[in-house]
Image 1: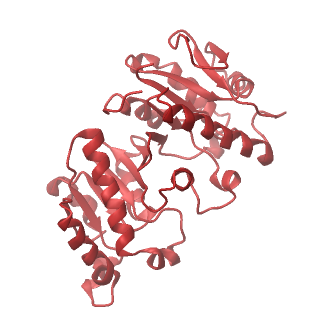
Image 2: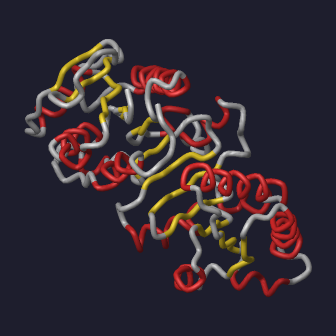
Image 3: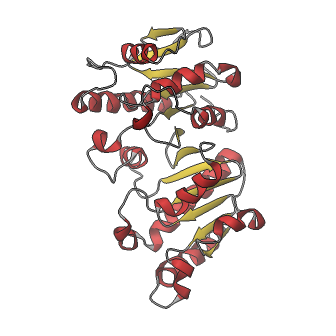
Length: 324
């Protein structure tokens, strides 16, 4: 079906069912899109009841010939649990991996336009703090190292070259080839999805770019990478000083600021845009998005979750040229 979107319910022990219920109550915002939930029907039903969100839901076993407007459809994925907010790690791990497998198959077979996954606890799911969904999907598609994490807002997007690694390991991982691969992926995505040649700002690693000293990463890695990227006709400027890049992005007309590590770009970005942003994995053979926040452990069952980022994730599919 045209404009059909799959939303993975994601982490069972989270605010995700609350977010799902809240977006369904605002379905008037998505008149151009149809979506369904991929997750465990009974879990979502019990969680919604617990937080007093009353919406009409329906369990389905496939997505063929269904009406996506009348009720919130849930493509059921098996999951064993007793307490709907305390699902054991061993139970939920297989459930989450199976959910991604189903969503990937639907996307590759053009049954859906793409998928949105609600947040998960990556350590409990993958058993490794350094592996997130971006790396998990990239490894599955055999593009690890070429993928890029893009945190997107229409006014500005950011992307970190390294993602979930300790700060002390950043300079060891950085190299010219990695930077080139990531920026090529970003450039291709903007051309394909938005029909735009992006203007990219590349931040340095060190404060004041370490004054561009001979042994600095800016001099040995970034500047050689920038020269190669410009030969590839990618519109990129840098290395930019991290302390002023976010104050000058409008003046410089940057579409994207690319940083050397996760918090270098995500911290100032979230300060500016808060929940009005989405996380997109670039380089995959399908569109994968997630809301730009975590599982909300501190507000589970309190009915305080903000659905803005999930709303923006759904709206994004109306802006792009990919069709199911």
